[in-house]
Length: 144
Image (cartoon, rainbow, N blue to C red; front, side, top):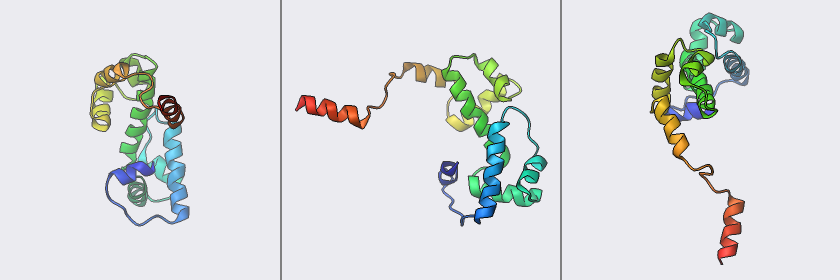
């Protein structure tokens, strides 16, 4: 969540702790209910803020408007399901997109590639892409 705010390159002043807690309550709600449509009015009510104030504070804290954050969470879950081998059309309905092309559009916007290219790339990567520090030092000790 913090990462999204820093990716935008805009660093607004931090929110008051109480407001930050309200926004975190909303993000947790979105993460639990990602597969269904969530109205902005519903989210604003959870935060206890007016609709306009909620959208402004949410974007300031997270770096994305609520609807984009909702789509971002759906894409994150879709990525995990793709790695489990589920068909993309099934994943689209599972995470709440109306069809596969809707998932493809959002997936490409967030990840820069289509779901098919993402799956192909992930299958081509070796199982252990990065070597842990412990195994690296053990290998270096053996080589020395």
